Image: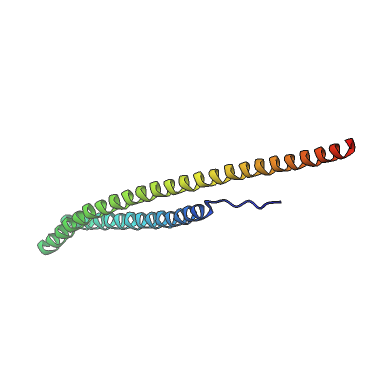
Amino acid sequence: MAKFVYKMENVLKVKEQIENTRKQEFSLAQGKLTIEENKLKELKKRLRIYEQELKEATSNKIDVNLLRRLGESIKISREQIKAQIVQVEVAKKNLELAQQRLADAVKERKIQEILKEKAFEEFKLEISAQEMKEIDEVVSFNYNNRSN
């Protein structure tokens, strides 16, 4: 029996490799987003601490230098939070892009697998037709030999 050889097997392998690369990119983008979100949480936590310290400092004896430092710390923390929010948004966009690229790669691989399955079905039909032809020839040959 003939062996099935898919002509586009190399393309299918490339599509699988691309899909694996996209999976890795997606995973890295997810990790980056998590890191950026954690940084944002820490900055917000630090801001709350500074605000609490400022509140406590204003309720006690007023230390102008402490109030000034805490005010500056709060201002800097708020700026860092704004910048970090931008980083989180960038990480989210990168994650969305990686997710779309992964989905495209999966779709392309599946298309190649469907094409391979169709080619295999055609191969089986051809083999079946060839076997039927051979059987017909044998039957015809045997019938012709009996008649003579």
